[in-house]
Length: 240
Image (cartoon, rainbow, N blue to C red; front, side, top):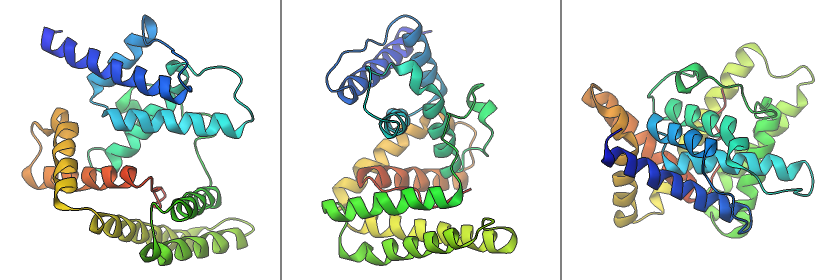
């Protein structure tokens, strides 16, 4: 590994360690030894820092759902969630189909695979929370209401939403997700969008070589959309 590459990896590990410390209410859990090797691999795979942090967030959300926190969380516990979120990010940006083996051999995090009603319940909860906190406002009401209607419809199907009905539901959720991101983008000024575009360029740099220009343009637009989503703490409404 060249010195410059080592510096990039070391900085990535420092950022992850700082974030993990904050998530652990200031309790310092060092990213050293085997943990450093693990997080270094994330950097070498091109996992953006914010994607890794979103994976850490996902582990913490599940950890808190299981009751009061018992001990500080080590970064090693978050590995499966980080790889899952990275896989989702690559699918969202069109970089790759969903094949977890391409991002390292791992098993899905326990409890990370949700049914459609569970997914929609989480979506509605997060949207309602964002609306209550003022993160999103009136123009998002129709998004929240439509997501809630999809949740009610999914719950009404005792055997689950299947066949053509499921295909149609997933298409509606994809459209709803794109509408939500478009609304969120409209709330940002040019400076904020320029910052997200620059960040998307950095995140995609490890994957750009050999990509056709139109493919990269689509990936860049999707990566910007994912940054907008995280800026407003919005859920992914689309479901696969």
